[in-house]
Length: 108
Image (cartoon, rainbow, N blue to C red; front, side, top):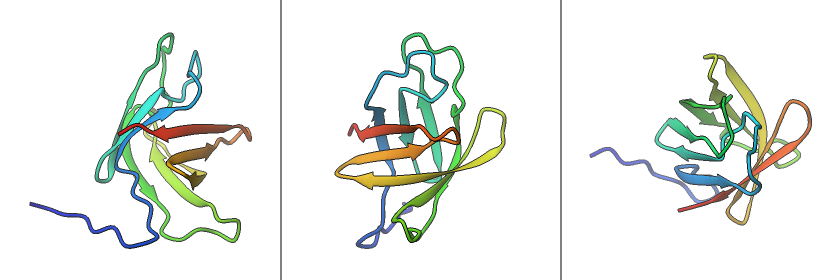
């Protein structure tokens, strides 16, 4: 049985995360389940296309000087994209390339 050790101060993304606000027709998923190195997204009502559907991810080990970490995810087009992220009280906030922020709350 393989185990992952999370050291104090490290962020563990594994588990289910749900958007704080409905996704509507936005291509960012309603929910995401992060597993060991992979993720699986879930469509919300009315969503036709997900930019993040299923694939791999990696979270930077150390925060930058603004306290942000970086989440690299494979996308529906198989490209790797990196997003600044921040964590507060069970929430994950992802900064999109257009400047808007998408917030997810831990759902498990």
